[in-house]
Amino acid sequence: MAPCLLVYSRTTGYRHDSIPYAADALRRIMGEWTVDHTEDPAALESPLGRYAAVVFLSTSGEVLTPKGRERFAEYVESGGGFAGVHAASTTEYDWPHYGDLLGARFDRHPAYQPGKALVEDTQHPATQHLPKIWEFTDEWYDFRTNPRGSVRVLLTADESSYEGGGMGADHPLAWTRDQGAGRVFYTALGHAEEAYDDPAFREHLRGGISWAAQVS
Image 1 (cartoon, rainbow, N blue to C red):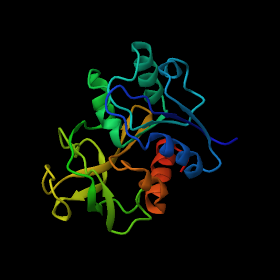
Image 2 (cartoon, rainbow, N blue to C red):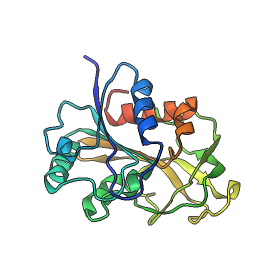
Image 3 (spheres, rainbow, N blue to C red):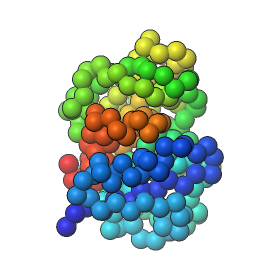
Image 4 (cartoon, one colour):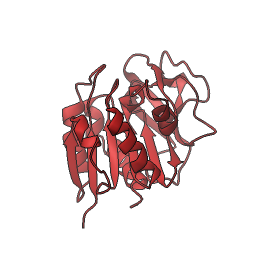
């Protein structure tokens, strides 16, 4: 039976225009997987055990109910996969556990522009296909804290390759971590529709989501 994926893209803050396109793209990216897409918080209040992973796709603001928070935390703790894409780090600021789960919270970003991502982990399914220096166009998120030390860093930003970076020489962009029996993958990339047509980014997502779901 094909794995099932829940893509959740509710926003109560800034809303990315790319969300509908990105959600459709994830169906193609994940191939044989069954992909459900919703913005209904009630979906997170129901048992999530049938899903191999849950993706927060550029969610923003407070997007979970108290019951949804409880269900989601239990799901990951008991072995469920979680993947956060782009603005997922701008989510659930009022729930401290979410920041710990994800690894870091969004702070600011410079203008959307070309830059370079440096592959730090060449063995992970999300990055093993990438060149050591990956040229990409995105918003190059800064985070309130540097997650290094509590996460496995996959990609870092080369701040010398774009204008307005605010974290310095050590600027994680994508990472993984374990939460109980579950796995967490986060990538700061994925602002614009164009990203979801990029073969390297598509494989970055597929590899990260599959790893989080423990099927890669």
